Image 1 (cartoon, rainbow, N blue to C red):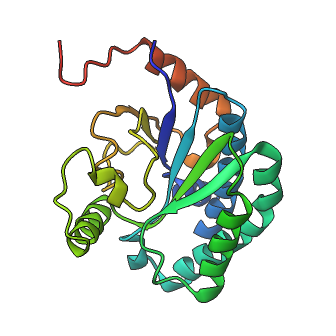
Image 2 (image 1 turned 60 degrees about the vertical axis):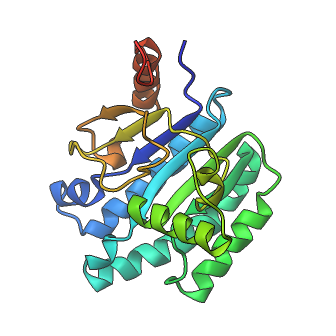
Length: 226
């Protein structure tokens, strides 16, 4: 039976959720942060799940209105501060993938502090993809290998990715009804089982994730074989 050790989610639909309710888009992001908490807690309490990777901010998201981007940066910093006790209580280790260099010093310090504070937690690794693009990660990984004079291959390439050792993605899920990968985890998700739901991210629940995991366990994964 398939094991759902690494689940990756494209959290889509925050803005549409708010618009449907006549609210500013930022209210959808706030509600979406609450969903992150509930899904993370569910995964931490599921002994089978080892890694939860969440697409939080893409390299393309800088194109959004400046006011929205600024809000998202503040929301992320506030989220990490508020969630730290929950990370520690639930045994969650916090990690990131993506290029953090454009972020403010305050946000980068908060990210570093959260990583350091949760380094010894071992129930779940929660990975936030921040200023992340799959192609960008692959290019930066290749450049790291070149700088070290290493000839890359499929066996050693993982060691040059942003956070090595996360393993292959088992389930890649997108909420919000769109059916595309949007440049997410192009290397690690090569053989992931794909799931798409029309549920907007703020309405997504642990119960729906549990249903998706049950569906996943019934699938036949052949990895190119027969």
